[in-house]
Amino acid sequence: MTRIHQGVSTGLTAVALSLALAAATAPLAAAVPSGTVACDPAASDGTATDQAIATTLNPRLQGKMRGALNGYNVSCARTIVNTVRNRGLDNHAAVIAVTTAIVEGSINNLTYGDADSLGLFQQRPSAGWGTPAQIEDPVFATNSFLSHMLANFPNGAWKSQPVGVVCQGVQGSAFPERYQPQAGDAQLIVDALWAPTARLGVLQNGALTVKQGALTAGWSPEWGGGLARFKVSGSWIGVLTTGGELYVKEGDLNAPWVDERGGVADFELDQGAGRVGVLTTDGHAVVKDGGLAGSWVDQTNGVKQLRLSGDWVGVVFNDGTASVKEGGLLAGWTPETNNVADLQLDRASGRVGVLTKDGHAIVKDGGLAGSWVDQTNGVKQLRLSGDWVGVVFNDGTASVKEGGLLAGWTPETNNVADLQLDRASGRVGVLSTDGHAIVKDGGLTGGWTDQTNGVQQLGLTSF
Image 1: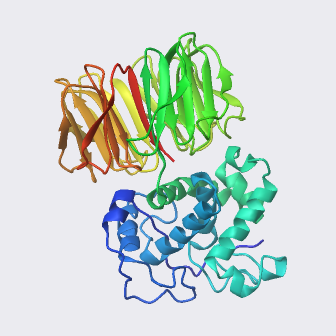
Image 2: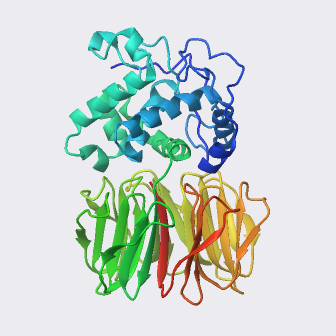
């Protein structure tokens, strides 16, 4: 299939879920862009919510859509996401479809293209994708894309391959390298449009229990004891035993555990990027991508901390210096800063944060080339999630800011031993110094709910 990459002047868009829900849904008055077909007939140029999403995401994206998003493009992305959900597929399938739509036509439902290519995915009637009218129907086109994906990557193989590999496997592009660089932005767009399934996990006396959905949901026992820590990312749950064995499960809570490896001091998960990383007991940072079936690649040694986020891998060395690499696992390192006590990464928002050894929380956005902004001092913990920055001060009080790095702080609570953030679901969680897991959803203005006590660790995620 050939591609159309020129003559497209409009972009795609998506936003933080809380903004999208808060905005009005009245159609905008502007006409649908020339050379395109409406994705939402009831709001041909997108709704006010779509435009709000575009405005919020424009400065946060890192690829070809950065600064180019509009309400019409968000309406097309929304149609793709809803079609994926209605098909019974998960968030990751939507990321694959939106990545493809970004590359093929900047998320425009085009009436033209190279040769006879048309629509969101530049599908060709002459290649059997459907009639022109069918291909220009965004629901039909998305379902057709998904059917080819499932056929070409059977038995769930599309879940474990890099996004760009799956896009290319469906599209057969002459430029396969163009897909993967857009996957991070596609994830951000999908996260803004997908009503997430939230998970809350707590570790009590070495045993893990998880609740899924509302904060009033019941607990599901996951691991009976002997755990040192756990982590959650999307639909992945990882546990580290006190003996240094790492196990990960993917998908439903009743899914089987996969024995990953032993000799593990700490680990990281990023389900969206399909990456698992471990810090070995002898200080090696070892990472695999391509899902749980991927192959391990030794990144470097002399490491005391490892972080994963999207296509970023970050490490803090024993001497307190921090470095981050972007792209494939064989990419080179970019030195970041020194005097580092803790490193935080959020690839979707393009933010890197460090907690210095003297208690300063310093954050930069705009990717690895961004500039550092000192957020505050007297800090013992730093967290990043989307456009949220959270800190716990030495006196046990916690504050979170939303939006730009120069925004003001919102005081959250006190008596805090640990702070967790999940911007996609709008949840903030704290572990109190007396072992209570206390969580709120609905954003920074939500109300707190005491979940349980006797807690050693809590974790938040959504997918």
